[in-house]
Figure (cartoon, rainbow, N blue to C red):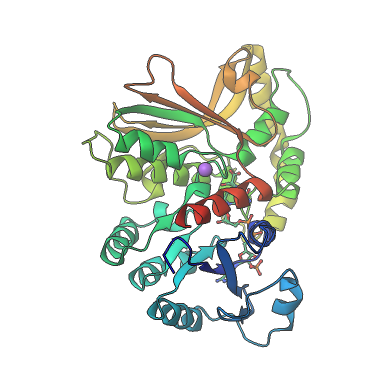
Length: 370
Ligand SMILES: NC(=O)C1=CN([C@@H]2O[C@H](COP(=O)(O)OP(=O)(O)OC[C@H]3O[C@@H](n4cnc5c(N)ncnc54)[C@H](OP(=O)(O)O)[C@@H]3O)[C@@H](O)[C@H]2O)C=CC1
Ligand SMILES: N[C@@H](CC=O)C(=O)O
Ligand code: NA
């Protein structure tokens, strides 16, 4: 069987919002044309491994619930490594936001297991982990694909790789990179001096599945800083030298947090949301101030390659600016200013968060392997 005819054996770690939707999209590809077989599932508590001959079916939820095997990534690594030794093509999909799971990518890649993920942690955290990922992938030839880490299902990483590989020069990438922040400010700041309370729109963004498991990870700007780090590292590891700083981690990005000091470090999302209304008046003041200037508030990110800086923060835009007029829902908008796309940038826009579009980005990466 040629590699292109061989089915890819898929192991899914993390079966939350995105993970469940990914499984459902993957299993909805008709079996006779599907390039995949789902062979392993791991939730935060349980695991299920069926092996290549009896792949997991639509009844995966009850199969996993009935499994007596605890979650155990060490055993999973052994099982998948064995499949690679039997000349199978294997992909592990990490749908968690876990640092622990992200820390295993070098091990998996070294073992020849391809890694596909919407989890930003490995590519935006410690520079050493990122360098181990590059090294492990180069050593074994196993691939890592992370389109859904920036703009969810929107094509951001793939076109950036193509611009770089074809020799275009990136001058600046700027935009609204957070689905949560987009939803919040599209609804909170419309140009009028009043409207819904800040805490109420944050709560709705969470209900809609846009936020990180802890919404503070969006409101502190770190989610945007992580996305900017991913893009910066991609540009820096491209063929052309750039003025961009070597980022030790997303913490090196100049980021303006929206979290009131008194709410720093609250351990759970529920507690955080319960206390947020105490600060609605402060956010109201920002909205009134912007409105008085004929502007709206938008949380934006910039990778300024030409001038060598990367930053994220809340800014004001006039009500006729595309960030004010073109965005709705959880839309992201990303403007690529390049040597070729100049003076008018290449623009990508659309839903930048939510289970369906994120899972689509992950499945699209799996299809790139196939
Ligand atoms: N939602 C979105 O719109 C987008 C999400 N993403 C990214 O996708 C990833 C998943 O997000 P989402 O589905 O929304 O989040 P969820 O919280 O719904 O899902 C994460 C799942 O991972 C599980 N989990 C945590 N640690 C482990 C572990 N060690 N082993 C196995 N499972 C584990 C959690 O289980 P438990 O709940 O039991 O802890 C949970 O079910 C995140 O990295 C997020 O940043 C990216 C783009 C958009
Ligand atoms: N919480 C993130 C999800 C996608 O990365 C966002 O709101 O953009
Ligand atoms: Na994307």
